[in-house]
Image (spheres, rainbow, N blue to C red):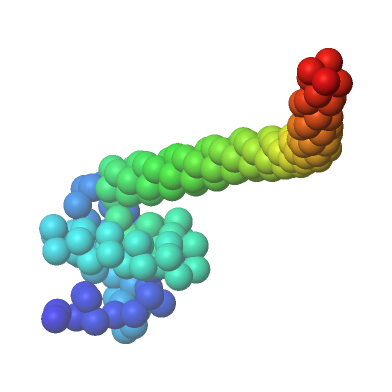
Length: 173
């Protein structure tokens, strides 16, 4: 690692872009002004540092003074795009949550309707059972009456046959 990369963030505030967009002027710890050429490696390091700072403390604009205005613009655009993507993801998550909540409410309504239907069916089944029991008891009493009538008929038949025999004996004698 060369001395440019070894310096800490204490020099970031004093870094000023020069006329040439690829270099920055900064004060070294010894107080000397020197030109630093921003290489692709520097840009990658700066980009990573900005990403890291953005995640850590959110104060990335302060540290962007290190790079040229064009590079700053690209960094800002990149951060804005990330922000837009994040906002879109958050909005999508909110929509998914709202959709899930609406779906859950619809399911709850369906469940309530199914429970009401179930209660209504239970009432109807109970009523039908009561009617069936009433019909069964009516049928049983009807059957008992029929058996009583059948016995009465058998008794009448027996009496009729006995009367016919008596009459036949009476007229035969």
